[in-house]
Image (tube, rainbow, N blue to C red; front, side, top):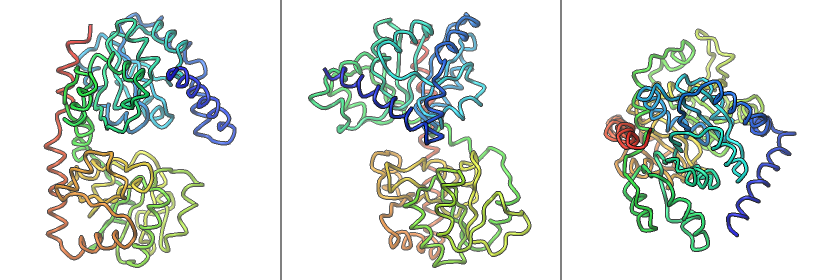
Length: 413
């Protein structure tokens, strides 16, 4: 019964997305991207008789997380072709640029028919899912065909629905996975309590991705000229409307401070919705590298730069913490910067741990944000210590990719 309701829910979601496509560019990409996907997969398989590895990510964040494993797989198994799939357009837009993927597609919605057709056509040697994109019909079909499938950088919490008494049918499908390579020991223990024992604590592969960032060459005349100041430079990344309210209140009261702002949604309508909050702001697209008249805020209205810009910060503010959850704090921490974010961070183990260590700070309102920011300004030693803690935390937790690859070699044929 629960799987039937699940299937109905999937169909309704897809229908709603297609209706939304009439009004939303993102929803249109979601629907249009799945048109003809089986024909594209068939073409890939017919033209390339090599064995395939299926690598799936939900969205851009999971892609960044799984990318180190994706690249190691390609390097270690050059005779295999990798089919990289996504649920979300944001991941797909970046995935198509990745040379490690031989074929990049949207994953058809999770139904019995789609799962059977997909697995029958692709017949992968291995399927890899990043973090927690659980598509139960695909998992069932992989299991029935005796195709190994694993989850990488997975993390589990006791309040997830498949651990509820009414969701035993979903839990039984989880038990069919060949292995879960989890981020922490609490996830491993939780799975074992529910009868899932093919679990290995390998860590979070995002650390392996971000440790490469400081060594990646990057220069930008506009940003560098803006950052040439004796005053602190705040880099605020992946920000949402609630984040802007706090940041604008602070920066407008402290005009000597400078802020580089990279909003989560970089489009004209989104940016125009909050630029009026900042009294002295200038758009990156309109800024001259020699002439930025009295601007306190540089708004980056271009995608693909965020992870590189954190290097210019005195400290970082990471957005999303007043919504569903914070974005990637490791991208700021790896540069040796303190990181600040909103109150909805408890689902993110790295945030919880970095707060405990003293490299990260959570704020619930504008007053708390001002208190933390002012302490950074007043006490240089405090700021430097927090930054050093952040950097050490990232470097000490790298290595998950090699641990995962050591496990995968036993599964790939």
